[in-house]
Image 1: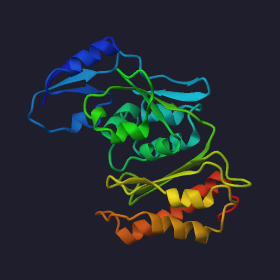
Image 2: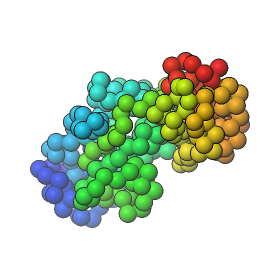
Image 3: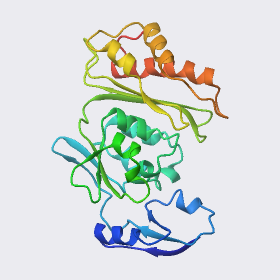
Image 4: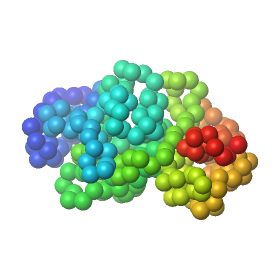
Length: 268
C-alpha cells in the first residue's frame, strides 16, 4: 500500500530517502504498481535525477537507468541485439513503462535483457561505488540487493557481434528459454565467444565448454554445435515447457545465434 511518493532532486537525496523503513525506488513502476501488499510503502521517484539519457562515451554505449525499453528499442546508437532483447517485451505499453535499471534491479527470471547484457560484458554505474561494477557481480553479490541504486548501464564493446533468441508460448506470455551470445569475430575463426543461456527459472549459465571448443576454430557443422550446447546445460521444466523441449531448443537457438552473428555463414 503506497502511502507517500518522494521526488528527490539529486542522487544523494534519493539515497537518504531509501534509508527510510519500507521504502523503494520508483522507476517505471511496473512491478510496484502491481503489488497488493498491505504494508505501508514509501516510493522514491527517480524521475528528476536525469537518468534517462542514452549516449556514446569513449567508445562505450551508456544507457541511463531510467531509460525505458521503448527508448532502447528506438535508439539507433544501442547495439542491435540489446534493442532486439528489449523488443521481446511485446506490449508497447509495458516497454514504455519498464526501465532498464528496474529490469536489472528486479531481475525477473525470464528477462531477455539480462542474458544479452551479460554476453556483451555490460558494466553498471551504482550510486556510492567509485568504479563500475560488472553485471555478473551485481547479480551475484548480495550486498547489491534491495537498496542499491543503478545509475547507468555501460556496454564496453558495442561493436561486438551479438544476437539473442527466446522461446515463449505466445508473444505476451512468460519466456521459457533465452539464448544470447557475443563474439569479437566468427570468421574466419571464432574469437572471444560468450554464450549465455537462461532457463527462465533463475539459472543463467555460460556455455564455457562450447566456447572453449570453438575458440580459434572455424565454425563447425550445426550438428556439432547443437550436441555440445545440449549436453552442457541441465534444463528445468516449468508450466510452459518440458525439460526435454528446453534442452532441444537450447541447442537449436545456440546454433541459430551463431549463424546470425556470422551473417548466415557456417553452422549449416
